[in-house]
Image (cartoon, rainbow, N blue to C red; front, side, top):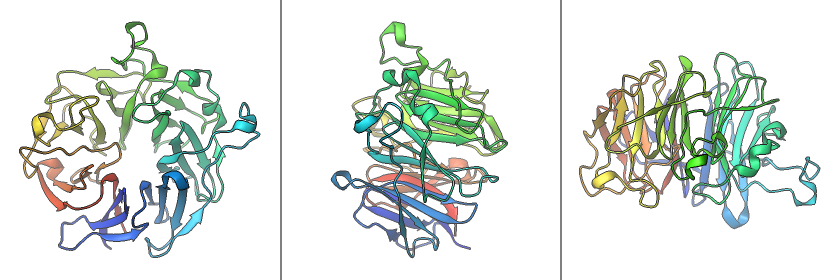
Length: 363
């Protein structure tokens, strides 16, 4: 068995030896094309890659042989006859995230897109259905874009205890919960706070910008949220959150990784807020809490100490199944491996294209 990191970049999909052995990243396909999302479905070993080709539209591909060959799949799409769409149905700008269904849902895939729509496939991406119950929420008129012009779904959490339970993060549309496989939805996120809104709407759950949601696999009720306005934790599956205050060097960022076995442990990559979006004081660091957010450690060993301008996107931060190794890819094309829970870091590659997502997998 070969352990690999899948690295989705602005110019192709790459695999890198996550054991840290020598060897250049190898391209698994789509050289020169922006790969917006990648999924390694551990249920059957299949790879999925979503492309954002701009003027040429979005694409979706599947590989049964770990990237040796690829099959193009239909892209999730809005039906012209869907309620409220009429002749002016929107189009999918790109797929922001792909997630597998539960182990009891063979063939089930979920796709979160820009604009903020959730799609479901029950045949490994051969066909897709819009989850209309979420799309038709009355509060959708309040949703808006963060870094993009449109709201988008970037976080999809499937409860490993009950695959019908879903939690979705939308920028900027808040946290949404379903107990019945997406048939009905309720808004969560009570306790999140949006400082970019007028005071009377600061606590409105429908306009929150949860940059990323991550859950502890062993305790799925614990959700960590890297929000535009700080770090938050939920202990009830996303219904309510508590603010984690006084985080240094910054509570702002995009990425969060949750320990798979310890609900009190999570990692973040801090940055300067809003339009600047660079490491604080030019120091590229990772922060870690091991007590539920009461305190944080700043992890620096092996990372650049000064004059660094790396930014880590939402999906470009990942932890392995044991909670021992982390992978981190930056907008400057640097790929880092953290060992011993992030105590030390090494540069696996410094010359990749800007990195959108990293995924630990075994092929």
